[in-house]
Amino acid sequence: MQPVGIGLVGAGAFGVFCLDAFAVMREVRITAVADVDAGRTRSLADKYRAAAYDSLDMLLADTAVEVVALNTPPYLHAAQGLAALAAGKHLFNEKPLALTLEDGAALIQKADTHSRHLTVDYVMRWNPYWQAAAKLARDGVLGALRHMDLMNHAAGLDLPNDHWFWDKSKSGGIWIEHGVHFFDAFNWVAGTPGQITASQSFARADGATDRVEALARFGDAAAHFYHAFDKNGQTEQTTVTLTFEHGYVTLREWVPTSIELLTTVEPDALHSYLPGQMAEPERIGAQQHRLFAFAPEGKAAVYRASIQAGIRDLARAVRDPSHRLAVTGLDGLESLRLAVQAENT
Ligand SMILES: NC(=O)c1ccc[n+]([C@@H]2O[C@H](COP(=O)([O-])OP(=O)(O)OC[C@H]3O[C@@H](n4cnc5c(N)ncnc54)[C@H](O)[C@@H]3O)[C@@H](O)[C@H]2O)c1
Image (tube, rainbow, N blue to C red; front, top):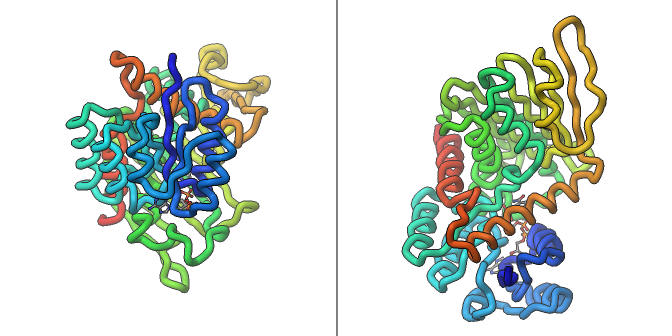
Protein backbone atom coordinates (compact mmCIF):
# COMPACT_ATOMS: atom_id res chain seq x y z
CA MET A 1 0.00 0.00 0.00
CA GLN A 2 1.24 3.46 -0.95
CA PRO A 3 1.74 5.36 2.35
CA VAL A 4 -1.00 7.88 3.08
CA GLY A 5 0.25 11.47 3.42
CA ILE A 6 -0.44 12.98 6.84
CA GLY A 7 -0.52 16.70 7.60
CA LEU A 8 -0.53 17.31 11.35
CA VAL A 9 -2.07 20.55 12.58
CA GLY A 10 -1.28 21.56 16.17
CA ALA A 11 2.14 20.24 17.11
CA GLY A 12 1.76 20.64 20.88
CA ALA A 13 2.23 18.10 23.67
CA PHE A 14 0.06 15.39 22.15
CA GLY A 15 0.76 16.31 18.52
CA VAL A 16 4.46 15.64 19.09
CA PHE A 17 3.64 12.24 20.65
CA CYS A 18 1.47 11.41 17.61
CA LEU A 19 4.18 12.49 15.14
CA ASP A 20 6.62 10.23 16.91
CA ALA A 21 4.13 7.34 16.65
CA PHE A 22 3.35 8.00 12.95
CA ALA A 23 7.02 8.37 11.95
CA VAL A 24 7.85 4.65 12.25
CA MET A 25 4.77 3.38 10.37
CA ARG A 26 4.86 2.09 6.82
CA GLU A 27 1.17 2.84 6.12
CA VAL A 28 1.54 6.61 6.58
CA ARG A 29 4.08 9.31 5.82
CA ILE A 30 4.31 12.64 7.64
CA THR A 31 4.20 15.11 4.76
CA ALA A 32 3.46 18.38 6.54
CA VAL A 33 3.27 20.02 9.96
CA ALA A 34 1.41 23.24 10.79
CA ASP A 35 1.29 25.20 14.03
CA VAL A 36 0.97 28.87 14.92
CA ASP A 37 4.33 28.48 16.67
CA ALA A 38 6.63 28.85 13.64
CA GLY A 39 9.80 27.76 15.46
CA ARG A 40 8.28 24.51 16.63
CA THR A 41 6.74 23.84 13.22
CA ARG A 42 10.11 24.30 11.52
CA SER A 43 12.06 22.06 13.89
CA LEU A 44 9.49 19.24 13.75
CA ALA A 45 9.18 19.50 9.97
CA ASP A 46 12.98 19.26 9.73
CA LYS A 47 13.02 16.26 12.06
CA TYR A 48 10.47 14.37 9.95
CA ARG A 49 11.58 15.76 6.55
CA ALA A 50 8.12 17.26 6.04
CA ALA A 51 6.86 20.63 4.82
CA ALA A 52 6.43 23.34 7.49
CA TYR A 53 3.41 25.64 7.31
CA ASP A 54 2.39 28.39 9.66
CA SER A 55 -1.22 28.37 8.52
CA LEU A 56 -3.87 25.71 8.08
CA ASP A 57 -4.79 27.08 4.62
CA MET A 58 -1.26 26.51 3.34
CA LEU A 59 -1.26 22.95 4.64
CA LEU A 60 -4.67 22.32 3.04
CA ALA A 61 -3.36 23.54 -0.32
CA ASP A 62 -0.62 20.88 -0.23
CA THR A 63 -1.81 18.01 -2.46
CA ALA A 64 0.56 15.54 -0.76
CA VAL A 65 -1.55 15.86 2.39
CA GLU A 66 -4.35 13.28 2.20
CA VAL A 67 -5.26 13.09 5.90
CA VAL A 68 -5.30 15.98 8.34
CA ALA A 69 -4.44 14.92 11.89
CA LEU A 70 -6.11 17.65 13.93
CA ASN A 71 -4.28 18.12 17.22
CA THR A 72 -5.25 21.68 18.08
CA PRO A 73 -7.19 22.57 21.25
CA PRO A 74 -10.86 21.45 21.16
CA TYR A 75 -12.44 24.86 20.36
CA LEU A 76 -10.67 24.82 16.97
CA HIS A 77 -11.72 21.32 15.91
CA ALA A 78 -15.01 22.27 14.25
CA ALA A 79 -13.81 25.17 12.08
CA GLN A 80 -10.48 23.54 11.16
CA GLY A 81 -12.08 20.12 10.59
CA LEU A 82 -14.75 21.61 8.31
CA ALA A 83 -12.05 23.44 6.33
CA ALA A 84 -9.99 20.25 5.99
CA LEU A 85 -12.96 18.18 4.78
CA ALA A 86 -14.03 20.95 2.36
CA ALA A 87 -10.49 20.90 0.95
CA GLY A 88 -10.92 17.17 0.23
CA LYS A 89 -8.80 15.86 3.12
CA HIS A 90 -9.74 12.92 5.34
CA LEU A 91 -9.82 13.73 9.03
CA PHE A 92 -8.10 12.11 12.02
CA ASN A 93 -9.76 14.24 14.65
CA GLU A 94 -8.42 14.43 18.17
CA LYS A 95 -11.15 14.15 20.75
CA PRO A 96 -13.53 15.78 21.29
CA LEU A 97 -15.12 15.71 17.84
CA ALA A 98 -16.32 19.29 18.54
CA LEU A 99 -17.59 21.36 21.46
CA THR A 100 -21.28 21.27 20.44
CA LEU A 101 -23.61 18.67 18.97
CA GLU A 102 -24.43 21.07 16.12
CA ASP A 103 -20.76 21.39 15.18
CA GLY A 104 -20.21 17.63 15.53
CA ALA A 105 -23.17 16.92 13.22
CA ALA A 106 -21.86 19.52 10.74
CA LEU A 107 -18.51 17.71 10.58
CA ILE A 108 -20.22 14.39 9.85
CA GLN A 109 -22.39 16.06 7.21
CA LYS A 110 -19.37 17.70 5.58
CA ALA A 111 -17.48 14.38 5.47
CA ASP A 112 -20.51 12.75 3.79
CA THR A 113 -20.92 15.58 1.28
CA HIS A 114 -17.29 15.37 0.24
CA SER A 115 -17.10 11.55 0.52
CA ARG A 116 -14.23 11.82 3.00
CA HIS A 117 -13.46 9.62 6.00
CA LEU A 118 -13.69 11.03 9.49
CA THR A 119 -12.55 9.26 12.64
CA VAL A 120 -11.89 10.29 16.24
CA ASP A 121 -8.69 9.29 18.06
CA TYR A 122 -10.41 7.19 20.72
CA VAL A 123 -7.31 5.32 21.86
CA MET A 124 -9.23 3.00 24.20
CA ARG A 125 -10.85 1.32 21.21
CA TRP A 126 -7.38 0.08 20.26
CA ASN A 127 -6.11 -0.70 23.76
CA PRO A 128 -5.80 -4.50 24.12
CA TYR A 129 -7.14 -4.48 27.71
CA TRP A 130 -10.23 -2.44 26.81
CA GLN A 131 -10.69 -4.70 23.78
CA ALA A 132 -10.56 -7.76 26.07
CA ALA A 133 -13.16 -6.20 28.38
CA ALA A 134 -15.43 -5.36 25.43
CA LYS A 135 -15.13 -8.89 24.03
CA LEU A 136 -15.84 -10.47 27.43
CA ALA A 137 -18.99 -8.33 27.61
CA ARG A 138 -20.04 -9.06 24.03
CA ASP A 139 -19.54 -12.84 24.36
CA GLY A 140 -21.38 -12.94 27.68
CA VAL A 141 -18.83 -15.32 29.24
CA LEU A 142 -19.13 -13.61 32.64
CA GLY A 143 -22.92 -13.33 32.38
CA ALA A 144 -24.82 -10.08 32.05
CA LEU A 145 -23.12 -6.70 32.55
CA ARG A 146 -24.55 -5.11 35.70
CA HIS A 147 -22.39 -2.06 36.48
CA MET A 148 -19.54 0.05 35.06
CA ASP A 149 -17.51 2.31 37.32
CA LEU A 150 -14.85 4.88 36.46
CA MET A 151 -12.67 6.53 39.10
CA ASN A 152 -10.35 8.93 37.26
CA HIS A 153 -7.99 10.91 39.49
CA ALA A 154 -6.07 12.86 36.85
CA ALA A 155 -2.96 15.04 36.91
CA GLY A 156 -4.75 18.40 36.70
CA LEU A 157 -2.21 19.94 39.09
CA ASP A 158 0.39 19.62 36.32
CA LEU A 159 -1.64 21.96 34.07
CA PRO A 160 -0.89 25.66 34.65
CA ASN A 161 -3.88 27.80 35.69
CA ASP A 162 -3.85 29.59 32.34
CA HIS A 163 -3.89 26.33 30.30
CA TRP A 164 -6.77 26.16 27.78
CA PHE A 165 -8.01 23.03 29.60
CA TRP A 166 -9.40 25.16 32.46
CA ASP A 167 -11.19 27.57 30.07
CA LYS A 168 -14.53 25.99 29.23
CA SER A 169 -14.92 28.09 26.10
CA LYS A 170 -11.77 26.42 24.75
CA SER A 171 -11.91 22.89 26.17
CA GLY A 172 -15.65 22.40 26.66
CA GLY A 173 -14.94 21.41 30.28
CA ILE A 174 -13.97 18.03 31.75
CA TRP A 175 -16.91 16.05 30.36
CA ILE A 176 -16.34 17.20 26.80
CA GLU A 177 -12.53 17.36 26.81
CA HIS A 178 -11.83 14.11 28.63
CA GLY A 179 -15.10 12.42 29.61
CA VAL A 180 -15.88 11.59 25.96
CA HIS A 181 -13.17 8.87 25.97
CA PHE A 182 -15.03 6.97 28.70
CA PHE A 183 -18.53 7.65 27.39
CA ASP A 184 -17.41 6.12 24.11
CA ALA A 185 -15.73 3.18 25.87
CA PHE A 186 -18.79 2.44 28.03
CA ASN A 187 -21.11 2.71 24.97
CA TRP A 188 -18.88 0.21 23.22
CA VAL A 189 -18.58 -2.24 26.15
CA ALA A 190 -22.31 -2.12 26.90
CA GLY A 191 -23.20 -2.29 23.19
CA THR A 192 -26.03 0.13 23.75
CA PRO A 193 -26.29 3.94 23.99
CA GLY A 194 -26.26 5.48 27.45
CA GLN A 195 -28.39 8.06 29.24
CA ILE A 196 -27.14 10.33 32.02
CA THR A 197 -29.50 10.27 34.99
CA ALA A 198 -27.72 12.65 37.41
CA SER A 199 -24.58 14.75 37.58
CA GLN A 200 -22.77 17.22 39.81
CA SER A 201 -19.62 19.33 39.62
CA PHE A 202 -17.17 20.95 42.06
CA ALA A 203 -15.04 24.07 41.56
CA ARG A 204 -11.73 24.89 43.23
CA ALA A 205 -10.98 28.25 44.87
CA ASP A 206 -10.16 30.05 41.60
CA GLY A 207 -13.54 29.05 40.15
CA ALA A 208 -12.26 26.38 37.72
CA THR A 209 -14.29 23.17 37.76
CA ASP A 210 -11.87 20.40 38.67
CA ARG A 211 -14.20 17.55 39.68
CA VAL A 212 -17.29 16.15 37.97
CA GLU A 213 -19.43 13.10 38.66
CA ALA A 214 -22.37 11.44 36.94
CA LEU A 215 -24.68 8.46 37.11
CA ALA A 216 -25.91 6.83 33.93
CA ARG A 217 -27.61 3.77 32.52
CA PHE A 218 -26.61 1.81 29.44
CA GLY A 219 -29.56 -0.47 28.77
CA ASP A 220 -29.76 -2.71 31.85
CA ALA A 221 -26.29 -1.74 33.13
CA ALA A 222 -25.83 1.01 35.71
CA ALA A 223 -22.80 3.31 35.43
CA HIS A 224 -20.87 5.81 37.49
CA PHE A 225 -18.26 8.30 36.26
CA TYR A 226 -15.96 10.39 38.46
CA HIS A 227 -13.25 12.65 37.06
CA ALA A 228 -11.08 14.67 39.42
CA PHE A 229 -8.27 16.76 37.95
CA ASP A 230 -6.73 17.38 41.36
CA LYS A 231 -3.70 15.06 41.40
CA ASN A 232 -0.26 15.26 39.79
CA GLY A 233 1.77 12.91 37.61
CA GLN A 234 3.04 11.06 40.68
CA THR A 235 -0.29 10.60 42.44
CA GLU A 236 -2.76 10.19 39.55
CA GLN A 237 -4.65 6.93 39.20
CA THR A 238 -7.52 5.61 37.13
CA THR A 239 -9.55 2.50 37.81
CA VAL A 240 -12.40 1.07 35.74
CA THR A 241 -14.39 -1.75 37.29
CA LEU A 242 -16.92 -3.67 35.23
CA THR A 243 -19.24 -5.85 37.28
CA PHE A 244 -20.85 -8.85 35.62
CA GLU A 245 -23.22 -11.49 36.99
CA HIS A 246 -20.30 -13.89 37.42
CA GLY A 247 -17.35 -11.67 38.16
CA TYR A 248 -15.46 -8.39 38.12
CA VAL A 249 -13.11 -6.97 35.49
CA THR A 250 -10.68 -4.24 36.55
CA LEU A 251 -8.60 -2.02 34.25
CA ARG A 252 -6.00 0.22 35.88
CA GLU A 253 -4.37 3.46 34.60
CA TRP A 254 -6.05 5.80 32.15
CA VAL A 255 -4.23 3.95 29.36
CA PRO A 256 -4.66 0.48 30.87
CA THR A 257 -1.66 -1.82 30.84
CA SER A 258 -3.31 -4.68 32.68
CA ILE A 259 -6.58 -6.50 33.24
CA GLU A 260 -7.70 -8.36 36.36
CA LEU A 261 -10.61 -10.79 36.51
CA LEU A 262 -12.13 -12.02 39.75
CA THR A 263 -14.70 -14.58 38.76
CA THR A 264 -16.50 -17.83 39.46
CA VAL A 265 -16.00 -18.86 35.82
CA GLU A 266 -13.31 -21.52 35.27
CA PRO A 267 -9.98 -20.01 34.05
CA ASP A 268 -9.83 -22.33 31.02
CA ALA A 269 -12.81 -20.54 29.50
CA LEU A 270 -11.09 -17.16 29.89
CA HIS A 271 -7.43 -17.57 28.93
CA SER A 272 -7.99 -16.73 25.28
CA TYR A 273 -9.45 -13.33 26.22
CA LEU A 274 -6.39 -12.09 28.08
CA PRO A 275 -3.72 -10.20 26.11
CA GLY A 276 -0.08 -9.69 27.05
CA GLN A 277 1.71 -11.66 29.73
CA MET A 278 -0.44 -13.77 32.00
CA ALA A 279 0.20 -14.54 35.67
CA GLU A 280 -0.65 -17.99 37.02
CA PRO A 281 -4.40 -18.02 37.91
CA GLU A 282 -5.04 -18.01 41.67
CA ARG A 283 -7.86 -19.54 43.63
CA ILE A 284 -9.54 -16.94 45.89
CA GLY A 285 -11.69 -18.59 48.57
CA ALA A 286 -13.98 -21.45 47.71
CA GLN A 287 -15.59 -19.98 44.60
CA GLN A 288 -13.48 -17.39 42.85
CA HIS A 289 -10.48 -17.31 40.54
CA ARG A 290 -8.16 -14.36 40.02
CA LEU A 291 -6.70 -13.93 36.53
CA PHE A 292 -4.24 -11.19 35.74
CA ALA A 293 -2.53 -10.21 32.48
CA PHE A 294 -0.33 -7.21 31.81
CA ALA A 295 1.79 -5.43 29.20
CA PRO A 296 5.48 -5.72 30.18
CA GLU A 297 6.30 -3.04 27.56
CA GLY A 298 4.58 -0.38 29.71
CA LYS A 299 2.20 2.53 29.24
CA ALA A 300 4.00 4.65 26.64
CA ALA A 301 4.38 1.69 24.27
CA VAL A 302 0.74 0.64 24.68
CA TYR A 303 -0.45 4.24 24.18
CA ARG A 304 1.66 4.67 21.08
CA ALA A 305 0.45 1.39 19.57
CA SER A 306 -3.17 2.51 20.09
CA ILE A 307 -2.56 5.78 18.24
CA GLN A 308 -0.86 3.86 15.44
CA ALA A 309 -3.79 1.42 15.20
CA GLY A 310 -6.25 4.32 14.89
CA ILE A 311 -4.40 6.06 12.05
CA ARG A 312 -3.72 2.68 10.38
CA ASP A 313 -7.44 1.99 10.31
CA LEU A 314 -8.06 5.38 8.66
CA ALA A 315 -5.21 4.89 6.18
CA ARG A 316 -6.71 1.55 5.22
CA ALA A 317 -10.12 3.13 4.63
CA VAL A 318 -8.47 5.81 2.45
CA ARG A 319 -6.84 3.17 0.23
CA ASP A 320 -9.53 0.47 0.33
CA PRO A 321 -13.11 1.61 -0.37
CA SER A 322 -14.51 -1.62 1.12
CA HIS A 323 -12.86 -1.02 4.52
CA ARG A 324 -15.16 0.29 7.25
CA LEU A 325 -13.75 2.48 10.01
CA ALA A 326 -13.84 1.03 13.52
CA VAL A 327 -14.50 4.47 15.06
CA THR A 328 -16.84 6.72 13.09
CA GLY A 329 -17.92 10.34 13.36
CA LEU A 330 -21.21 9.03 14.76
CA ASP A 331 -19.29 7.41 17.65
CA GLY A 332 -17.69 10.80 18.27
CA LEU A 333 -21.10 12.45 18.22
CA GLU A 334 -22.75 9.86 20.50
CA SER A 335 -20.07 10.25 23.17
CA LEU A 336 -20.30 14.04 22.80
CA ARG A 337 -24.09 13.76 23.32
CA LEU A 338 -23.48 12.07 26.68
CA ALA A 339 -20.89 14.68 27.63
CA VAL A 340 -23.33 17.49 26.84
CA GLN A 341 -26.02 15.64 28.80
CA ALA A 342 -23.68 15.27 31.79
CA GLU A 343 -22.87 18.98 31.56
CA ASN A 344 -26.56 19.96 31.51
CA THR A 345 -28.21 17.40 33.83
N1 LIG B 1 -6.49 10.98 22.25
C1 LIG B 1 -5.74 11.22 23.32
O1 LIG B 1 -5.34 10.29 24.04
C2 LIG B 1 -5.34 12.65 23.66
C3 LIG B 1 -4.39 12.92 24.65
C4 LIG B 1 -4.01 14.24 24.90
C5 LIG B 1 -4.61 15.26 24.18
N2 LIG B 1 -5.55 14.98 23.24
C6 LIG B 1 -6.19 16.04 22.45
O2 LIG B 1 -5.22 16.61 21.58
C7 LIG B 1 -5.52 17.99 21.35
C8 LIG B 1 -4.29 18.82 21.67
O3 LIG B 1 -3.96 18.68 23.02
P1 LIG B 1 -2.50 19.07 23.56
O4 LIG B 1 -2.45 18.64 24.97
O5 LIG B 1 -1.46 18.60 22.62
O6 LIG B 1 -2.57 20.68 23.51
P2 LIG B 1 -1.35 21.70 23.37
O7 LIG B 1 -1.85 23.02 23.84
O8 LIG B 1 -0.12 21.12 23.98
O9 LIG B 1 -1.09 21.77 21.78
C9 LIG B 1 -1.94 22.45 20.90
C10 LIG B 1 -1.10 22.99 19.76
O10 LIG B 1 -1.97 23.64 18.82
C11 LIG B 1 -1.32 24.82 18.38
N3 LIG B 1 -2.31 25.76 17.87
C12 LIG B 1 -3.12 26.59 18.55
N4 LIG B 1 -3.90 27.28 17.70
C13 LIG B 1 -3.59 26.85 16.45
C14 LIG B 1 -4.06 27.18 15.15
N5 LIG B 1 -5.02 28.08 14.97
N6 LIG B 1 -3.51 26.53 14.09
C15 LIG B 1 -2.51 25.63 14.25
N7 LIG B 1 -2.03 25.29 15.47
C16 LIG B 1 -2.57 25.88 16.54
C17 LIG B 1 -0.59 25.35 19.60
O11 LIG B 1 0.45 26.24 19.25
C18 LIG B 1 -0.06 24.05 20.21
O12 LIG B 1 1.21 23.71 19.69
C19 LIG B 1 -6.74 18.30 22.23
O13 LIG B 1 -7.91 18.19 21.46
C20 LIG B 1 -6.71 17.21 23.29
O14 LIG B 1 -7.99 16.92 23.80
C21 LIG B 1 -5.90 13.69 22.97
